[in-house]
Length: 176
Image (cartoon, rainbow, N blue to C red; front, side):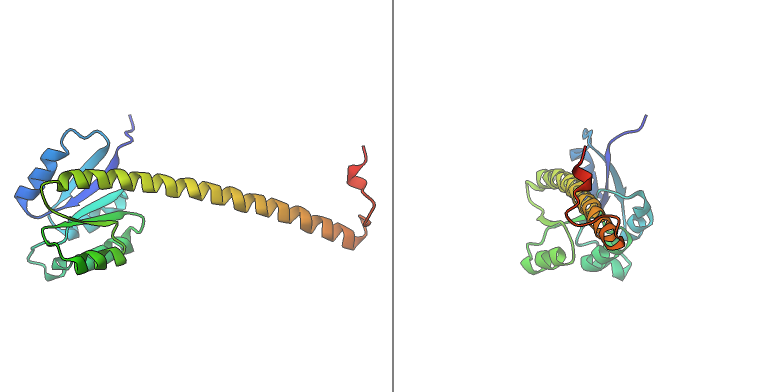
């Protein structure tokens, strides 16, 4: 039986914080959480097309390239551009938050006593955002389809008039 759960990746190398996130989302039926210790592990699994990646901005690893959240974000967007990325951090640095948003992050959450609820709310917001993007895409398709069909008929009539098959004022298509 196929499940409709959305996949969410969590990249957190701090075992305590990762376990706290696991405990908070343990009973969640809407999302399938996958946990990674490093961004490299997350990159390797992006072919699963997760709905979102929740990532600690301050990954402290041996790999120096993983210490920069902006580089990690750019790499995720390069590999899977439709996946939304939410950063979380203990630092209330507005410049970092703005920089992550400018680079394509969905949000930046400062960890405090409410951050788990904020993360849960962000996942619901991302899900609604994706739904509305898909809906607007359907309407765009219908708009362009209608425009294309209308253009086809106009071009057809012009060609038939130029070829002399239809004569202006003949109103042949209106006769019973």
